[in-house]
Image (tube, rainbow, N blue to C red; front, side, top):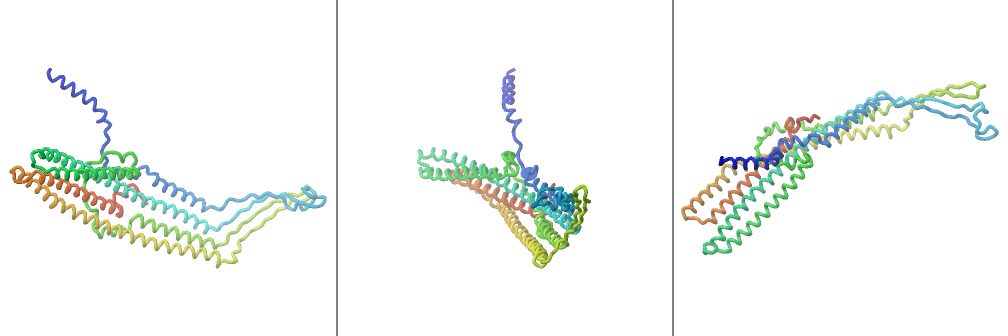
Length: 424
């Protein structure tokens, strides 16, 4: 019976905090942030709409132009006694006709192929943009994680220094600690707090960048740990996969668009022609008339018009080819840069894990044992604790840099998780 009030108190406390627990937001992982970045993304949807628009235009381009209906009055007098009268002069008649422009089939097919190539270009641009969005979302998430870890470790360091300050202040009255040490510690503590506030600012900035891609989900808490990702492939395999990068496919598709426009310019050299049938109504006592005529283009200066257009389009094909090669060189340079970042970060992480952090921890343990034996002073112990926290902080920064390099590598590689659900 004595435990009943305690049980009731625990139940009341649980009921009080239950709404908070029930509405607690789940942690936002790196993989989830990358996945959310391309879900219902308006920028990617705009490429789909543009592609569909080009496909619709391709169908329209393959058709003949609409026929034209012509209505008119021919040979209406405007002077003399018959002026403005429709039924006095025998040459006056009301006409109705239909005209059809005949665009050559080759020209219409070339125009349709151009629009279809443009539709494919929008799809490859969508694949490139999707990869870039996922890479940028991953980098923004890592920026948030790094700033969050820095904030936590700076706060831990500040708490350690605040506790050390209390100890030093208590020892001033006994003469064991000079006041100058307290002032020195206050300066260091202020710098640590300033660094913590700077980390808070960077976290808010990084969350704003992440919100660009995932909206309100960017404000969810992040996991306290960072899973280390293995490097995707060997260097040679990575270089081979660069050839399948959507940016290169997009460059090739741009070349295809330019080539189709050159083909269209050649097809436009064929002569367009049109035909027209006209029916003319005269006065009732006069016979009606029918007319038929054909209109043909006369390209009398083809060397300076049509041929120049073909030459223009062929030069644009060469331009697209050069841009494709430039993009290949750019991707290879990005690959080398990302590989260098990943390899150096991996080496630094190993150095921190195997040597730097164990050495800082051993020094702290040694000084703690010396202080317990009365050989070392407390100030050295506190300094060793801060050095260990600082080493742990740099270790987290190195791990984050390594994951950034992996995110950049994933952007460059075909078949990576960045391509899931995005087909060029």
